[in-house]
Amino acid sequence: MTASQLATLLALTAALMHAGWNAVVKSSGDRLCTMAALDTVAFFGALLAVPFVAPPGAAIWALIGLSLLVNLVYRYLLVRAYHHGDFGQVYPLVRGLPPLLVAAIAALWLGEHLGALALLGIGLISAGILSLLHGRGHWAATGAALGAGLCTALYTVIDAQGVRQSASALQYVVYFTLTMSLPVPLLAAARRGPALARHLRQQWRASLFGGLTYAGAYALVLVAMRLDSVAKVAALRESSVIIAAVIATLLFKERFGVRRGVAALLVAVGIGVVKLG
Image (tube, rainbow, N blue to C red; front, side):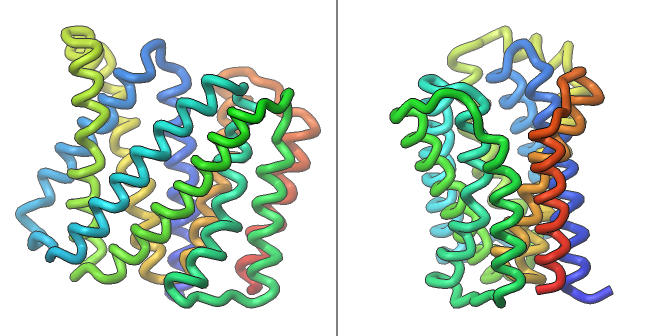
Protein backbone atom coordinates (compact mmCIF):
# COMPACT_ATOMS: atom_id res chain seq x y z
CA MET A 1 0.00 0.00 0.00
CA THR A 2 1.41 3.39 -0.99
CA ALA A 3 1.49 6.40 1.34
CA SER A 4 -1.27 8.05 -0.72
CA GLN A 5 -3.50 4.97 -0.51
CA LEU A 6 -2.95 4.74 3.25
CA ALA A 7 -3.82 8.43 3.62
CA THR A 8 -7.07 7.84 1.71
CA LEU A 9 -7.97 4.88 3.92
CA LEU A 10 -7.24 6.90 7.07
CA ALA A 11 -9.23 9.92 5.86
CA LEU A 12 -12.29 7.84 4.93
CA THR A 13 -12.10 5.94 8.24
CA ALA A 14 -11.93 9.30 9.99
CA ALA A 15 -15.02 10.41 8.07
CA LEU A 16 -16.92 7.34 9.33
CA MET A 17 -15.77 8.00 12.90
CA HIS A 18 -16.67 11.70 12.61
CA ALA A 19 -20.20 10.78 11.58
CA GLY A 20 -20.36 8.34 14.50
CA TRP A 21 -19.57 10.85 17.23
CA ASN A 22 -21.87 13.41 15.63
CA ALA A 23 -24.67 10.85 15.91
CA VAL A 24 -23.94 10.58 19.64
CA VAL A 25 -24.20 14.37 20.00
CA LYS A 26 -27.36 14.55 17.89
CA SER A 27 -29.12 11.89 19.98
CA SER A 28 -28.29 13.65 23.26
CA GLY A 29 -30.71 15.74 25.27
CA ASP A 30 -27.91 17.94 26.64
CA ARG A 31 -25.38 18.62 23.91
CA LEU A 32 -23.10 20.79 26.05
CA CYS A 33 -22.69 17.98 28.60
CA THR A 34 -22.26 15.46 25.80
CA MET A 35 -19.48 17.45 24.13
CA ALA A 36 -17.87 17.94 27.53
CA ALA A 37 -18.04 14.19 28.12
CA LEU A 38 -16.46 13.48 24.73
CA ASP A 39 -13.69 15.97 25.43
CA THR A 40 -13.11 14.42 28.86
CA VAL A 41 -12.65 10.97 27.35
CA ALA A 42 -10.32 12.41 24.71
CA PHE A 43 -8.31 14.26 27.38
CA PHE A 44 -7.70 11.19 29.51
CA GLY A 45 -6.94 9.09 26.44
CA ALA A 46 -4.25 11.59 25.42
CA LEU A 47 -2.99 11.77 29.01
CA LEU A 48 -2.31 8.03 28.96
CA ALA A 49 -0.06 8.53 25.93
CA VAL A 50 2.00 11.37 27.43
CA PRO A 51 4.75 9.08 28.84
CA PHE A 52 5.41 7.75 25.33
CA VAL A 53 6.09 11.09 23.61
CA ALA A 54 8.45 13.95 24.35
CA PRO A 55 6.98 17.42 24.95
CA PRO A 56 6.99 19.53 21.78
CA GLY A 57 9.21 22.54 21.28
CA ALA A 58 8.15 26.17 21.35
CA ALA A 59 7.36 26.29 17.61
CA ILE A 60 4.90 23.39 17.89
CA TRP A 61 3.29 24.85 21.02
CA ALA A 62 2.80 28.09 19.07
CA LEU A 63 0.95 26.22 16.32
CA ILE A 64 -1.16 24.34 18.89
CA GLY A 65 -2.04 27.65 20.57
CA LEU A 66 -2.92 29.24 17.23
CA SER A 67 -5.08 26.23 16.32
CA LEU A 68 -6.84 26.47 19.70
CA LEU A 69 -7.59 30.15 19.11
CA VAL A 70 -8.99 29.51 15.63
CA ASN A 71 -11.03 26.55 16.93
CA LEU A 72 -12.59 28.72 19.66
CA VAL A 73 -13.52 31.37 17.08
CA TYR A 74 -14.96 28.59 14.90
CA ARG A 75 -17.15 27.31 17.71
CA TYR A 76 -18.36 30.81 18.55
CA LEU A 77 -19.25 31.50 14.90
CA LEU A 78 -20.98 28.13 14.59
CA VAL A 79 -23.16 28.87 17.61
CA ARG A 80 -23.97 32.31 16.15
CA ALA A 81 -24.82 30.79 12.78
CA TYR A 82 -27.24 28.28 14.31
CA HIS A 83 -28.76 31.06 16.42
CA HIS A 84 -29.74 32.99 13.28
CA GLY A 85 -30.22 30.19 10.74
CA ASP A 86 -31.43 26.62 10.42
CA PHE A 87 -29.37 23.46 10.05
CA GLY A 88 -30.06 23.18 6.32
CA GLN A 89 -28.65 26.66 5.73
CA VAL A 90 -25.65 26.53 8.06
CA TYR A 91 -24.17 23.02 8.00
CA PRO A 92 -23.57 22.65 4.23
CA LEU A 93 -21.78 26.02 4.16
CA VAL A 94 -19.61 25.16 7.16
CA ARG A 95 -18.59 21.73 5.80
CA GLY A 96 -18.82 22.32 2.04
CA LEU A 97 -16.52 25.32 1.70
CA PRO A 98 -13.42 24.11 3.64
CA PRO A 99 -12.13 21.65 0.98
CA LEU A 100 -11.89 24.48 -1.56
CA LEU A 101 -10.50 26.95 1.00
CA VAL A 102 -7.95 24.42 2.27
CA ALA A 103 -6.69 23.91 -1.28
CA ALA A 104 -6.16 27.67 -1.66
CA ILE A 105 -4.61 28.22 1.79
CA ALA A 106 -2.35 25.14 1.51
CA ALA A 107 -1.08 26.41 -1.84
CA LEU A 108 -0.18 29.78 -0.32
CA TRP A 109 1.10 28.58 3.07
CA LEU A 110 2.51 25.10 2.44
CA GLY A 111 3.35 25.43 -1.25
CA GLU A 112 1.09 22.51 -2.20
CA HIS A 113 -0.15 22.68 -5.78
CA LEU A 114 -2.64 20.10 -7.03
CA GLY A 115 -3.25 18.89 -10.54
CA ALA A 116 -6.42 19.63 -12.49
CA LEU A 117 -8.03 16.26 -11.72
CA ALA A 118 -7.48 16.56 -7.97
CA LEU A 119 -8.92 20.09 -8.00
CA LEU A 120 -11.91 18.87 -10.00
CA GLY A 121 -12.49 16.07 -7.48
CA ILE A 122 -12.33 18.52 -4.56
CA GLY A 123 -14.77 20.76 -6.40
CA LEU A 124 -17.20 17.86 -6.88
CA ILE A 125 -17.02 16.93 -3.18
CA SER A 126 -17.72 20.53 -2.18
CA ALA A 127 -20.54 20.77 -4.74
CA GLY A 128 -22.10 17.60 -3.37
CA ILE A 129 -22.08 18.94 0.18
CA LEU A 130 -23.25 22.41 -0.86
CA SER A 131 -26.11 20.84 -2.83
CA LEU A 132 -27.64 20.00 0.57
CA LEU A 133 -28.03 23.73 1.20
CA HIS A 134 -31.66 24.74 1.74
CA GLY A 135 -33.77 27.00 3.87
CA ARG A 136 -34.38 30.73 3.76
CA GLY A 137 -31.15 32.70 3.83
CA HIS A 138 -30.34 35.11 6.65
CA TRP A 139 -27.36 37.41 6.22
CA ALA A 140 -26.18 37.01 9.85
CA ALA A 141 -26.36 33.21 9.67
CA THR A 142 -24.68 33.14 6.25
CA GLY A 143 -21.88 35.44 7.40
CA ALA A 144 -21.23 33.43 10.56
CA ALA A 145 -21.34 30.13 8.63
CA LEU A 146 -18.86 31.45 6.06
CA GLY A 147 -16.60 32.58 8.91
CA ALA A 148 -16.86 29.15 10.54
CA GLY A 149 -15.99 27.49 7.24
CA LEU A 150 -12.95 29.73 6.87
CA CYS A 151 -11.88 28.86 10.43
CA THR A 152 -12.20 25.14 9.62
CA ALA A 153 -9.88 25.59 6.65
CA LEU A 154 -7.43 27.66 8.69
CA TYR A 155 -7.12 25.26 11.62
CA THR A 156 -6.81 22.34 9.19
CA VAL A 157 -3.77 23.92 7.52
CA ILE A 158 -2.32 25.03 10.88
CA ASP A 159 -2.59 21.49 12.22
CA ALA A 160 -1.09 20.08 9.02
CA GLN A 161 1.90 22.35 9.52
CA GLY A 162 2.11 21.33 13.18
CA VAL A 163 1.93 17.59 12.60
CA ARG A 164 4.51 17.77 9.81
CA GLN A 165 6.97 19.76 11.93
CA SER A 166 6.55 17.56 15.02
CA ALA A 167 8.95 14.77 15.87
CA SER A 168 6.11 12.34 15.21
CA ALA A 169 2.41 12.41 14.44
CA LEU A 170 1.70 11.01 17.91
CA GLN A 171 3.52 13.91 19.58
CA TYR A 172 1.30 16.51 17.93
CA VAL A 173 -1.88 14.43 18.34
CA VAL A 174 -1.31 13.95 22.07
CA TYR A 175 -0.49 17.53 23.01
CA PHE A 176 -3.03 19.01 20.59
CA THR A 177 -5.75 16.79 22.11
CA LEU A 178 -4.76 17.70 25.67
CA THR A 179 -5.05 21.39 24.84
CA MET A 180 -8.23 21.23 22.78
CA SER A 181 -10.06 19.02 25.29
CA LEU A 182 -10.02 21.51 28.16
CA PRO A 183 -12.28 24.51 27.25
CA VAL A 184 -15.65 22.74 26.79
CA PRO A 185 -15.50 20.61 30.00
CA LEU A 186 -14.53 23.72 31.98
CA LEU A 187 -17.43 25.66 30.44
CA ALA A 188 -19.86 22.78 31.08
CA ALA A 189 -18.69 22.44 34.70
CA ALA A 190 -19.29 26.16 35.24
CA ARG A 191 -22.73 26.12 33.62
CA ARG A 192 -24.08 22.67 34.49
CA GLY A 193 -22.29 21.88 37.76
CA PRO A 194 -23.48 18.54 39.24
CA ALA A 195 -25.48 17.81 36.08
CA LEU A 196 -22.23 17.20 34.21
CA ALA A 197 -21.12 14.56 36.75
CA ARG A 198 -24.53 12.87 36.53
CA HIS A 199 -24.31 12.87 32.74
CA LEU A 200 -20.89 11.22 32.85
CA ARG A 201 -22.19 8.51 35.21
CA GLN A 202 -25.41 7.82 33.30
CA GLN A 203 -24.08 8.11 29.75
CA TRP A 204 -20.62 6.65 30.17
CA ARG A 205 -20.98 4.07 27.38
CA ALA A 206 -22.08 6.63 24.78
CA SER A 207 -19.46 9.06 26.13
CA LEU A 208 -16.72 6.46 25.80
CA PHE A 209 -17.71 5.55 22.25
CA GLY A 210 -18.17 9.18 21.25
CA GLY A 211 -14.97 10.34 22.91
CA LEU A 212 -12.84 7.64 21.29
CA THR A 213 -14.28 8.25 17.82
CA TYR A 214 -14.12 12.03 18.32
CA ALA A 215 -10.43 11.98 19.24
CA GLY A 216 -9.58 9.15 16.88
CA ALA A 217 -11.17 10.75 13.83
CA TYR A 218 -9.02 13.86 13.91
CA ALA A 219 -5.93 11.89 14.93
CA LEU A 220 -6.30 9.81 11.75
CA VAL A 221 -6.73 13.00 9.71
CA LEU A 222 -3.52 14.44 11.19
CA VAL A 223 -1.60 11.25 10.38
CA ALA A 224 -3.04 11.27 6.84
CA MET A 225 -1.86 14.86 6.34
CA ARG A 226 1.71 13.72 6.98
CA LEU A 227 1.33 11.21 4.16
CA ASP A 228 -0.50 13.11 1.42
CA SER A 229 -1.77 16.49 0.28
CA VAL A 230 -3.62 18.46 2.94
CA ALA A 231 -6.29 19.53 0.45
CA LYS A 232 -6.98 15.94 -0.64
CA VAL A 233 -7.25 14.69 2.94
CA ALA A 234 -9.51 17.60 3.95
CA ALA A 235 -11.83 16.89 1.02
CA LEU A 236 -12.01 13.16 1.74
CA ARG A 237 -12.75 13.89 5.41
CA GLU A 238 -15.84 15.88 4.47
CA SER A 239 -17.45 12.74 3.04
CA SER A 240 -18.56 12.37 6.67
CA VAL A 241 -21.52 14.60 5.74
CA ILE A 242 -22.89 11.87 3.46
CA ILE A 243 -22.12 9.10 5.95
CA ALA A 244 -23.96 11.13 8.60
CA ALA A 245 -26.96 11.36 6.26
CA VAL A 246 -26.98 7.57 5.91
CA ILE A 247 -26.75 7.16 9.70
CA ALA A 248 -29.61 9.64 10.12
CA THR A 249 -31.71 7.55 7.74
CA LEU A 250 -30.95 4.24 9.43
CA LEU A 251 -30.96 5.29 13.09
CA PHE A 252 -33.09 8.42 13.26
CA LYS A 253 -35.51 7.46 10.45
CA GLU A 254 -34.89 10.65 8.53
CA ARG A 255 -35.82 10.50 4.84
CA PHE A 256 -32.78 10.14 2.57
CA GLY A 257 -34.49 11.67 -0.45
CA VAL A 258 -33.35 12.73 -3.90
CA ARG A 259 -31.29 15.70 -2.65
CA ARG A 260 -29.13 13.50 -0.41
CA GLY A 261 -28.88 10.88 -3.14
CA VAL A 262 -27.52 13.42 -5.63
CA ALA A 263 -25.14 14.80 -3.00
CA ALA A 264 -23.87 11.29 -2.20
CA LEU A 265 -23.30 10.60 -5.91
CA LEU A 266 -21.35 13.83 -6.39
CA VAL A 267 -19.19 13.14 -3.32
CA ALA A 268 -18.54 9.55 -4.40
CA VAL A 269 -17.52 10.66 -7.91
CA GLY A 270 -15.41 13.42 -6.37
CA ILE A 271 -13.54 10.92 -4.17
CA GLY A 272 -12.78 8.79 -7.22
CA VAL A 273 -11.54 11.78 -9.21
CA VAL A 274 -9.36 12.97 -6.29
CA LYS A 275 -7.64 9.59 -6.27
CA LEU A 276 -7.10 9.70 -10.04
CA GLY A 277 -5.48 13.11 -9.55
